[in-house]
Length: 254
Image 1 (cartoon, one colour):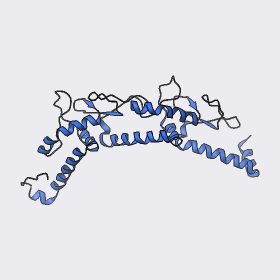
Image 2 (cartoon, one colour):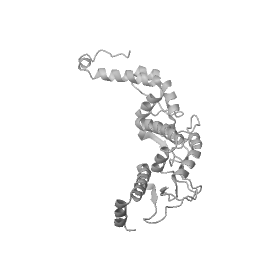
Image 3 (tube, helix red, strand yellow):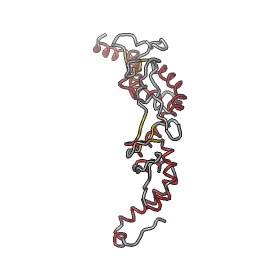
Image 4 (cartoon, rainbow, N blue to C red):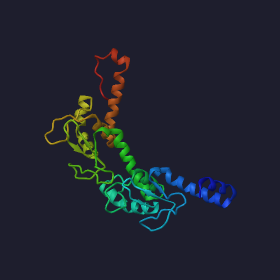
C-alpha cells in the first residue's frame, strides 16, 4: 500500500491508527540504544524471522558482523555469557553465532541492559572500573584485542584484569592492584623526597614510574591517597604569596 494511502486510512480508522502508533513506539524503543542495529522488513512485507527462535518480529537486531536475531534471543545469549565474562574479565559478550569472534555491538549491549537486570548489573560494574581506569591512566592502559576477548594477565599476580598499566618509561606492565602495592612500599621515600618519586617494579629496572601510575594508585589505596593529599596541600601552600616571601624557610609535611 502506498505511503500516502496508508496515512489517509490512518485518519479514517482508529484501529489502523492504533496499530500504526504501536508499531512506531516499538521501533522507537528498539532504536533508542541500537539505532544502527535495527533491521526491519520492507514496507508491506511480513516482519523478519529470527533465525534462533524461529518467530517473526517487527524487527531484528543486527550486529556489525552481519548476524541478526531478535532482542529476546540476544538477551538470553548475553545472560548465559555473564559468568564467563566476569571470570575472564571481558568487557562485553560476543556475537550469538558460535562461529563468529566479533563482540556484541555497544548499541545492542546497551539495549539488552534495559531488558535484563543481570546484564545491567554486570555492565554497571564494568563501566565503573573502566571509567576509573580511563580517568586516572587512560594513556598507559593495555586492553584485550577486542571487548569480547579475555582480559590480559598480570605478570606479577597472574590474575586476569580488564586492563594492565604499562610504565611507558620501560615497558613493564602490571595490574593496578600490583602497582598500588608496589607504590605503597615506596611511600617512605616519597615522604622524604616530598614528591611521588618512584622506581619501576620490573626486576632490576631503574626506570622512573610515570605519573599516571601514581594517579591510579591514589584511586586504589587510601594510604597513597592520604600522602597525595599532603602533597597537594604542600603544592597549594607553595603557590601562596606569603610562602614565596618566606621561601628560604623549609615547608614540612604535617
